[in-house]
Image (tube, rainbow, N blue to C red; front, side, top):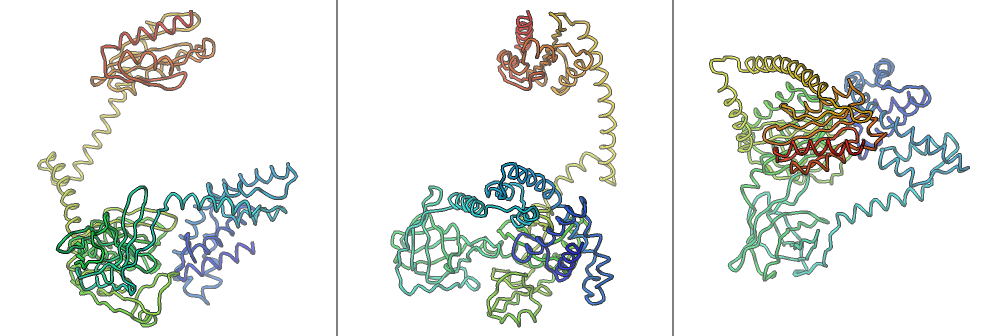
Length: 594
């Protein structure tokens, strides 16, 4: 109980101080502390359901006076802890059972050490942390073979590395003084010289990396994709397919090496692509600000992707964002766009001054002594990306999806500008087409709901009709049954609307007559369908197999099928072969039974 209380204090104070559990850095420390407490409650207090979140109000009463942030954030703290408890308890239950079996196996073999490869499987497959495994085992006087565990971990890393590795030649250096300068904030084109290049082979594709003395190309960073464009001179033009950063070098990816690498080129960024990317990047800043306003100050960026036609933004929040909240965020962002706030860019700002300006710095991120601050109205962030000159350039912002990507992490995906317009146009056209089927209806939603209600009612009536029809068919088949040995055999071509009804009919008869063997055929929408149902007696006594029989007879309908020994189905494109398939199946069964 002391362990739970102590860990709860650490977790609650951290969450109140804006640090949320996650899989990286400080957030992972918080997650591990919480999971240890959950494990103690699970093992020693028999708490198999989330319980720690219910202790938060008591903690607030005890310590809220000294730390008022607890009281201010009590709802958030409870939601975060409850979500984490839920997600870990299922892992814990599975892991504890597996670990218990590993411990029993080791004791039976008179071992006090658990094999590292077994513990690695527990970690890698079921997400059971090594430190928690070692803690639980130490309570039983046992330990883990760490060398084996580390060996398995290294092998996995090597496999991952080989899957992604590429072969690179050494750099060919053309200019010794190859200090590179980025001029892309101000210019989309400039004269450049190649200072070094190398060949790279990735997944059997041959590419070249170029480094310039200066460049207008923005390298992929901070979630923003790299620029594309060309370099050209009087003699040739070479396409830049991507721009990346490696060891502080801006690398331009090309499919072919220029014929004269030592020549002077004009580097040109694709302007349309850059503008659309900038629109989306600025929109992520505006959305981040709006999310904090609508959902609370606990919202923190956890990742982003900014492309020319699409943006996504990952952030900390421990419940689904409601439709109403999404609309508020959307309206707030579009309001900031209409304000046409101009960009305020501050370069080489001392970190302390940036904080005084209200710039958002991500907890756990490393920043230099001097940073770049981007401000649009009330949105102030540290950022190295490219942005619009004024928010009005974005045009329009539209959210199209909100989802969960991990415990406590939500994702919003959105469009801006022309792409957002196309998205809205497509949905308006859909609404227009639906409305065209409901002339003179003032309330389209109610009209659609009425049709759906009517459809549901009719579906029930159709279901009852089909059930009655299957009953009539079943009675007809009962009259057609032929005794073959100690089973009853029925073969029929039936008239049904879908293959599922054949299955229903077969199971209905099987439930009535445990000794029946049934062979059905039907033509549905121009295609041939077969179904074979065998009694358990036929399978055990005569070694009959419905799947084997249907594979054989489905040749008659130019198709194929399969299933289980007692029930199998097939489909084919030759309905004319149904009768011969039925006769063939009947013959195979009768010959086998004798």
